[in-house]
Length: 238
Length: 238
DNA sequence: CAGCTTACAGTCATTGTGACCTGAACGCGA
DNA sequence: TCGCGTTCAGGTCACAATGACTGTAAGCTG
Image (cartoon, rainbow over all chains, first blue to last red; front, side):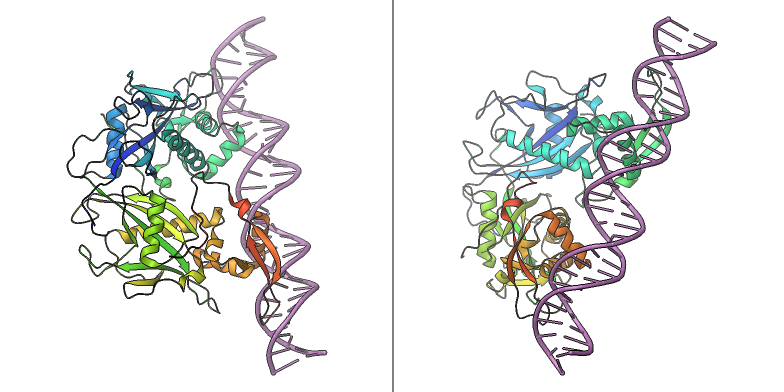
């Protein structure tokens, strides 16, 4: 790292997070992706919706700042948090130069109901987004692309579900994210071959049909691939 | 983007780049990956080797700053430049808080000879690295992982070669990066099926054996995949 | 021209995957 | 109680992709 040449004007560092969850109405219809946004109260961009975030304190790490600001503004505790990209075009904010380190997060569907529900914090459906502030729409679309891409080679769908889940629920996550129908038999075969699922032995009772098996994600087998470690928190209170 | 809560201490923003090229001794032995590093002249970390980079000016974009600092310190003009990751642990620099937006770049092998050759700018072999300053070793290893991973699903090997190349040269790039032997016939079949190569019709004369065909990369077919656009410059003078 | 090396083309077996089928297990209504 | 419908769960079949291998063509050297 070089030495500061001058003590003059400098870009400000912000941290923002794109949060994904599934719509809780998992009853009959297919679930859809939802994203919480916060309404901006101050200029620039007052009134518009924006990604939750905040300025980076001098003594806080990037991952910690992303998790904290996300929790402070939405009350959510993510199960998956990963750095997405750093956006720093000189004109992305009208007044001053702002560089945003953007993260993306996945939260359990049952966590959504415990989230802050405010007139300034609102959940939007993936294809029913409002007008966003700054370049946040571009950021959100990039995060969506990354989620869809990573779902196909990594095993992150469990981060959108609860502790245990049925094969049909897991398939529903893939179908909702990828926006396509998947063959139940082939999906089962692929997931069982991946070795990341553990059959709990339990079965979900009360269904009008044959009770499905309940699975758990094998945390031991998930530690390969990306060398940058991702935060996979157990839920903590805000 | 929120409003500054205080005008107090703030992290400084730096931009660094991990540059990859192949060793020019493409005569007989297999080429190897080489990385240019610069010697730090000032504290902290004076005397150690570090990634080329510099502070981010207020009015310059991230991509532009990465390309400029890379060119100023090494004299290189990269053919491929992509953002890698942003490193911002609070203790990664001893004195002040520094957040580094790190890029990775590929340069043509013939570009290496035009590069600055200084006692403060030196090329190191991939497995003969010196002691690096700060967390730059961790950064470099992550960039290496990304290069190896991306080479297998994207077509970026041409960025390490010249304008035209033989199939054996292209295979040599893959073998050098992936550190493994590849079957010539299967490699040819895979590359021809990818549709990214164009036969120039010319053949490389002067070889002691059957003259190989010269290929060119099909720039039109390379525009798919990652929605974040990468800089693919034509070479420009420093 | 013999002999060598590399370029390039083709074959065969294995594997992964999409499409489809069949039986099993449950609740529900007649 | 007994079909009956629905979903779970395990299987087969066909095709594409790929690794291992063999064969032929085209240049140079002695």
